[in-house]
Image 1: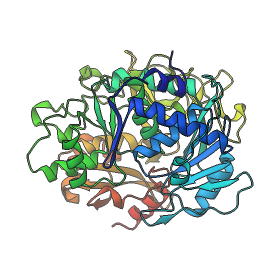
Image 2: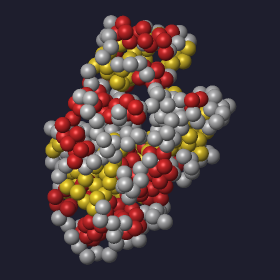
Image 3: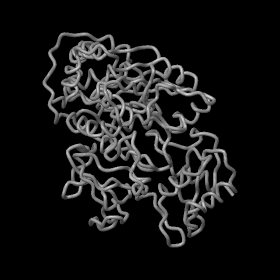
Image 4: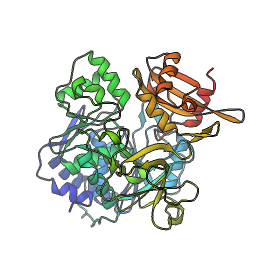
Amino acid sequence: MTDTIDALLRSRSGDDRPMVIDPDMSISYAELDSSTAELASGLIDAGIGKGTRLGLIMPNCADWVRIALAATRIGAVLVPLSTLLTTPELTAQLRTASVQHLIAVEEFRGRRYAPEPVPSLRRIWTPAEILALRGDAPAPPVRPADPLVIMFTSGSSGAPKGVLHSHGNALAATRSGLAARRVVEDTRLYLPLPFFWVGGFGTGILTALLAGATLVTEPIPSPQSTLELLRRERVTLFRGWPDQAVALAKHLGGRTLPDLQVGSLEALLPAALRSAPGARAALLGMTESFGPYSGYPADRELPESAYGSCGKPFPGMDVRIADVETGRPVPAGEVGQIHIRGPHILRGICRRSREEVFTPDGFYPTGDLGYLDADGFLFYRGRADDMFKVSGATVYPGEVERALRTIGGVRAAFVTNVPAGQHNQVGAAVIGTLRVEELRAAARRVLSAFKVPTRWLLLDDDEAIPRGATGKVDNTALRALLAAQP
């Protein structure tokens, strides 16, 4: 069983098909096994071995994959760090994860990475210095229970959390979702999501490794460069951002990408291959679950009664819905906080005790709201800390966002409360082509009156949405933008 990175790489050592491709480089499975084995020996000789916490700041590229897998195959603990971090944020995360060695590019998109002094940090390396390492030290044995990665995540507010996953739980979580994601050996998967997020590391790198697929990525997507890459590499599955797919479709001007298959983002598919709104499941996951833990086959439509759902929990994942205040389970169909349990979820959070992270019976309270229907389909209803009251009635931002996205001309929607004296108003930032009057009229047809936004912010693209270093929407900043609107 391939339950460690080392075992997984060894299992594909004779495979000459490409594993990862970027605009400038292609590395086959066989090359990846041999080159990471050589690099791993060099890391050990340089003092980076089993248990060493190794930070990595690089844009997406084939060498990111090579460095990360070389380190983890000898039991070093990878700490992927966001290229969006400021110096204080970087310093805080290095301290939280007790990083001992840091590999960092000098600059990326105008940001430089020079942290303040950190007690645990022994040395900062450039990627070129690391990639030049060679040695003859034997690799230590690595077990499925050994730590693999510390990934940082946060909600819309609060300090980022360093979430710890083992080889066994991360690979098992990734494996459990392969069928739903429809990634197989002949898949050529385009994924621009940053590798420092679980969506890039787990749903990208480890998914490709487990399936034997080919991963195609790039450091800075742009319509022209991305389309050239998609065509050149004959990509069959496009998993990026919805806004990116819309922009690419516009750039294509009615032309198609004939190699793309159903399961790709639908803006790039011919109209005949697209599904009805809500007919395909939106995968539900988080860093703490190491990516999606609930879904449905990406190339199949849900039963009509489950439209708008996140499919069903994957095998190995125990999901319950609990009352937000009491923690007691609630009946099917009732909204509560989603709790998850099982061998696929996080092993812990840096600097927090087990009692602070898990319930006494071993569940992790996700902070997400949702409900399970009578058939076991899971419906997401937003974050517990995001829900708010309007005239005494509860509003779930996620529910309003999904309803707004069903309106023609709306590419994306972001919803939060806007305080007005002692009361709340519903605020929505919308990316699309409609005017406020048109949006308001359409929203009244898909939402109860108290859920219809009264504050609207119209934007041209996703880049105008304020985000934190982990990529999640900064609701405090979004609320301020909406409060400034009439």
